[in-house]
Length: 139
Image (cartoon, rainbow, N blue to C red):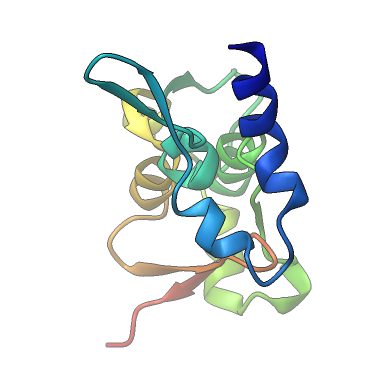
């Protein structure tokens, strides 16, 4: 029985680079009887912005830009550099955080960001660099 577990653990490591995708698609472990366990990471680990969380901003967070940075802090994503932001986005970052947006319960990180920036702005997510760009919606 231990030999089977060892060979299952080593199979992906021994596969060639061209075979990795085909092996990765078939990582299923038979636990016995009619139970099969798919070997995979959690959904939130693959898509950190879709992690469901509850958060309350500390009193030191007073502005929209601070709130966005705070909400994104543990997600692995960050706002684009302020040097690359346009003037209207910089003005948004400098606005006071509304009282109604100071706490969120059971919301995804992406939803929190969308609510904080409001309906007048679009959120562009760069998955490769893990940056978020806030741009004003076209009229």
